[in-house]
Image 1 (cartoon, rainbow, N blue to C red):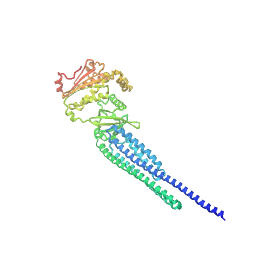
Image 2: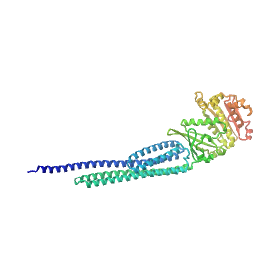
Image 3: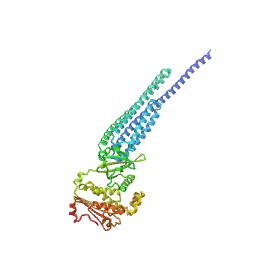
Image 4: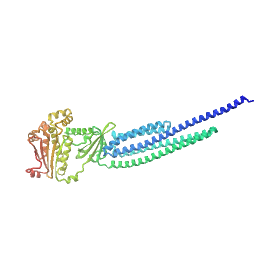
Length: 545
């Protein structure tokens, strides 16, 4: 007779074991799947962390390279402006990736702390570098070897810190992989025999997966390493070029804000102006410009206004300028180039002043006869003035040339203001008192009747004399009463109205003639008294019309 109870117990035990087997199998499968999923997540996280860290290394190299190019290409303003934007983009990209890397490694306490320290140092270094370019409060960015060395040391420190973070992530990755391998090995011993094959299969699959990820990781690391090596080579070459250029340039290179406050300048200022660069920073650019008559505040202001207007219109401008030197040594004439760039919404003006190399050219000069027609621009008038007196430096001393330049400049300004633009003394005086003259003059220049008016300048220079004829389209004036007055008879009011230019011309030129209308003047300067007597009875090629 069948023992039903024993049968039930027997089948129940078998069913229990089978159910237990099924449960263990299912649980093992679930655990294995979960473990595999978590493992894949860990591996993916490690790969992503490593890729992010390597990307930060590459971006750092790019940013440092752009930083060097910003100063390396100081004479090329388009490159300078473009690299400023690239540098800011690199900085923003690095900060975003540092934030993501911190989130990825938040559970890795040691690595997370290093990332935080790296972030702090990076922000400090980045802010210091940006302050060199944007604020330039107390630093000589272009030539200070201390700044170059500190910058290079900080760059190397940041790169080394990031390299340590990469190595730590790789080390933790290997430890996690070893831990998971041990888990599978332990699970294989603990699992019942029926799950051994299953565990082996899972382990085999996992090993393949691990190897695949390792191979992928090693390939990416190798590729990133090669990219880093290439970037390092380029950075090293740029560093050498940068050091060479910044230490060997003869030009004065500087930056200033819209108001003319100088923020950086290289050591060439010491050679030319006999002033240390540190003493120049923070001072106003326009205060270093030399004018023949320091009381002529109006001319200085108009010169500044014209430069500011050109820079506001985003025009790259070049002009001749004389700079004061320390202890009132004779001023030095240089060619100045200015260009404005906008960095993070702030306008910076980049300037270069180069010494005029003229000795060989002037020594070879024999004769010239030139005609110009210029618009109603004070900057152009100033440039034409420098052009007129350029070659007579061979025949006259500097003090006489300065007087000639002042007189010619006054005559040209009078031709523009009182001739072509028909600005009266009363209007000029009133607008100057209200600080509205520059805007008023700009409106007069742009008036329909004045737009096409030109100043005609014709001059002839040879070894004996210079002859200059200046014509405007104005109504003219009664020049005879001014030419007939002596210096003592000239009143202050008449001097301000028309007589300043005439008085200066009388004192400097040997002959001054006006046409009947008074809108054309002929000035002659002999280089020595002998020529004055010889040419007094001869007719020049340039005559009044």
